[in-house]
Length: 493
Ligand SMILES: NC(=O)c1ccc[n+]([C@@H]2O[C@H](COP(=O)([O-])OP(=O)(O)OC[C@H]3O[C@@H](n4cnc5c(N)ncnc54)[C@H](OP(=O)(O)O)[C@@H]3O)[C@@H](O)[C@H]2O)c1
Image (cartoon, rainbow, N blue to C red):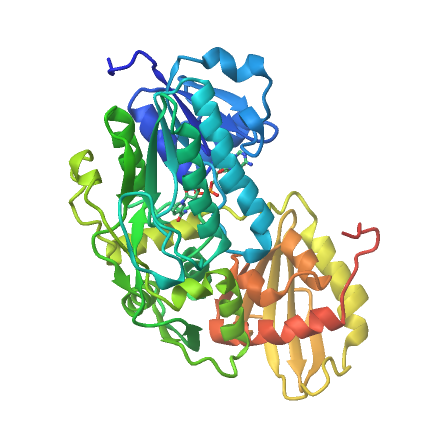
């Protein structure tokens, strides 16, 4: 029996990357859990999060309550959560918004700041022994500096609204809990990356914004050379911690009733941007990428990668702060073991990216019908016409395959900037094959989705000559936006 007879852990954010790992650890530890999940069908949503990683969620010992952390008592009437008063030993607040996008300021403050305050007040009202706030180690602002395992001073100038929202949350929850029986624990992870054993990651932010597009450019068994610059300080340092280590740290805190205060879940050794890039290229079989702070006349691919990194750019121009990391050593078994973010780790991480399902399902569509109509109504009437002004130099021959329902196939030849032939079959002489789901194809030909970002995002696959495919995709972007195709009967967004 734990020191308290309060057996249940209240958890927010269980459908998320870190919260899901915490829930898994709690299941292994045989805890009763009260999980707050927002939206409709919370049970199914939690089950889906678990299934992504082979975890059996919600599991027999988890009770689910719907709730939005932006609201007092998570939007629940008093008869829903207050009956749990005296039965919760710790409220683990893992819900949050990990985004560095300044246009999301209002949402960031609502979820990260107001949400943390609502969670702390609920912990107080339920008489929880401890409130465990999943915060961040990135509280150093523009100056970087050393972050102690204590409350931090306001750094003056934030690197992002995300940091500000997390800092304000820490200050506010400490004030709310100051004169109560509920002890505060603040767990501050560094950059949370893939699970060490399975390679799994749910996160789409920070370094994942770089890894995903690079992973898309790789081809198994081939070295792909892409001569491209990435805007970053090669000497900057990044501090990364795998999600399973954060889950272990959280469980150790839960299991240790005396653990209170501030804990850093950070790596002992940060890694230099240049080293990380070298490792990434080696693992993915890429060459030709260079990190540089000089940024002049970017080409289209460089611009696209830069755009996918837009919200994280500040962090790539600086080194992460340095962090104290003494306190977890005392309560987490083997915490001193170096977290080895080596070649094997990256290999597993990239293999897991490849297994992640696409966010939008193609559904049972008639792709063959869509491709046939596009061919007949849109491409055939344009045969022999100049497609793009100033692009009379374009010569290409490619195959296209659209899946979802009956697969649709065509091959297209472009000669001196004009479509010279379209065939309703594949041509084995074509050097490039684009594979794409029905849903994304319909968006691309309507001019609502550009092919190169769609490729970098995993919606389009390029087989054969990837460099040639990327060059073509970039030219076709202009074609689709100048000549959009709206299917008859299609609903407009
Ligand atoms: N990822 C990192 O690198 C990192 C590093 C340091 C600290 N952190 C902190 O760790 C926490 C979790 O991050 P994460 O990477 O696990 O993010 P995540 O995968 O995006 O998960 C966020 C979780 O919060 C839930 N949530 C968001 N808004 C909510 C609301 N209004 N009401 C109820 N639930 C809400 C989400 O629910 P839905 O599934 O419904 O969206 C999801 O379960 C955040 O506070 C973040 O600041 C993250």
